[in-house]
Length: 316
Ligand code: A2P
Image (cartoon, rainbow, N blue to C red):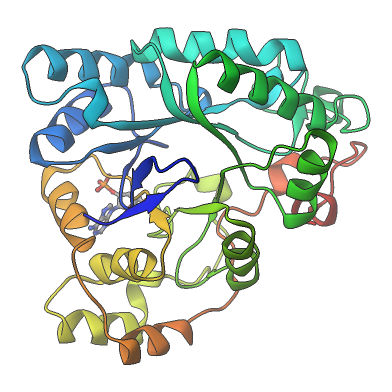
């Protein structure tokens, strides 16, 4: 396994298990199996609705002597309806209770979007709160405070542009340690990756396989399929691996962390093994050309007419 390193020397394994879309009833066994076969990095979030089951899997794996708290790296994320400074600590405490842990390795602001306290997803513009009312800087102050208490070792953001990262840093003097964003061969995010590299911010790639198990209403007609791409298939043959493994190996080889989701034992194994596949410079160059700047997770679900959010303000 390769690792990325935080500024204090702590390390995050380059490949972790994604748990978005892993259903309660499935995720317990997936996490137990992942631990048994050697996964040490788990990516969670309050909004995924499955942290209690993941917590039970951790506890049972610890009790069975399969791993221990200090051997795993656990990330979770603050949901959009708990963005006020004073809401961050109680939100993290609930996540820790659900995960049956007493600290996280990494806590992220999930989206640069604010919802009313009683809303999980916006139905109307009324459910969305303007960033003028609850600025990201206020949320970031809450994140800094929970790091100081030791409830999380590291703090960062997700779905943030460089402008938003600079804004929260400018207001507090504290730079996010991680940015987790959609990144895969069709949306390589080269500019953002360069910004993060130059700023000493680590980068985690979500939806590395294209998240084809998204809710149907979030799948665009005629969207390109990574699994159908000829270059990916060709390189898979060259390195005697599966197309999914090439997608993951590419992410690891370019120095990002990557969090494929699976609840299938065979695919869990295959995905973990991908972290150890080396691609040649020529293969990396060929894969770079596959980029289409195509987002699967468009963020349009936040951009309800009448609210302050638009695609430009979300990603800009
Ligand atoms: P499953 O959980 O049944 O394995 P992403 O990580 O981009 O969100 O993609 C997750 C989707 O990709 C899920 O539908 C998952 O299904 C599937 N998947 C995970 N690993 C592989 C693999 N190695 N080959 C093909 N599909 C995979």
